Length: 321
Image (cartoon, helix red, strand yellow):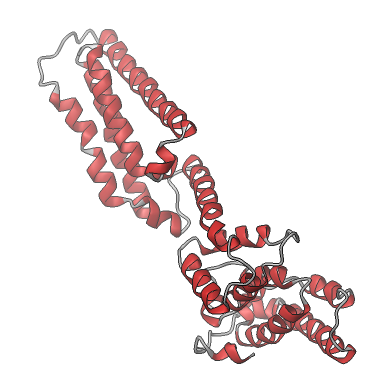
């Protein structure tokens, strides 16, 4: 991917050569509009995160203002390149050159298919690669907004919804490359206590503590998010703790995705009031303390330096916990 990134930046140089050459050869300012169109198309192909992602978003005034700002910035860039070319031509006393005006336009245009063949912005973003800091920032803002929109149907599910329906909805919503962003958005939304969202919380705890989610590490902090979602609900904590104990034992190299040991101890020492029998609450406290010790052990230098191999657990094994 890094090699592709270097090749893309090299191919992008063709984009800027076109207006420089046109200015150098003494072409009129009328070509600025054509070059601007090429620059805008290149930007839409290589940096789609900087543009509205769907028809509905294009209908908003904010999207049009953002698109207009992009077009004006490219117009300014082309004008500067064109002026630099004309200035260099004047200094070198080149004068007007008799070449086909399509030549400089073609040089800039060829950068679009070349860069697109070398670079898929969505694929690169899923692997954490960006052309520059501006592209990374734009992707982060766009992805966060998309994640917040995607979880709204889940938050609108009634507390009376059947568990099977909620589980299916959670699986569909989180079956994307940006599952970590959606899970983070759900965790933040469920930190409010104005609604219980019990079926949704239960489905999320089960989803985030499945071995196929934890083992690959593609959803960073999934176990910590599940704990935050279960926090305050002793029934959900009783589901979470045995599953977490099994997972930390199977995948100690994923200890960084678990809650911090100190936080686990704090929750164990301050369980909320409940109608559960005293011995059940005591068992839960012991389980949280045992989990804290297991996470602390897994976070040790030896475990971090030589992570254990990932055992192949079947997806449904934890369902019985």
